[in-house]
Image (cartoon, rainbow, N blue to C red):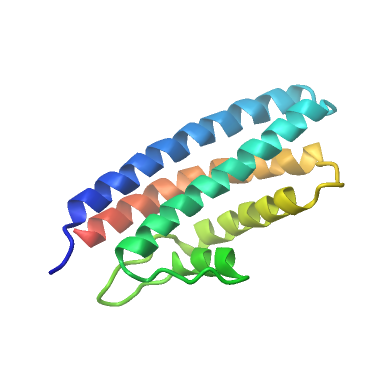
Length: 155
């Protein structure tokens, strides 16, 4: 028996709501950092919010993968494999969640999250974080259309 799609749609809608909150936090931190680009605390704070943003998207991807039973085993390349899965159409199972353009931008955020988690001795570059904040804005704009298209094609 197939699982009803309505609870899944409610779950992904709730996660999208959380993602939008983090997008707002990223935007606020980015605006403050633009005014004070030498402020290490703001730089670190924006880095943390960008880390959280990608993690929130990844949580959405896990919901999609779990519901459609195409979960990827936790391997050393788990994060990139999960992201790549989201741009694939799984014929007869689900449409793609991400466009190629959204995928590329999210992959930049994924790469940053990896650096953020593992580069304990490195300082963050405020100008790069401002660029990533702009990328986050672009992701949000693009993902609205991707998400709408995805939901229309699963019902």
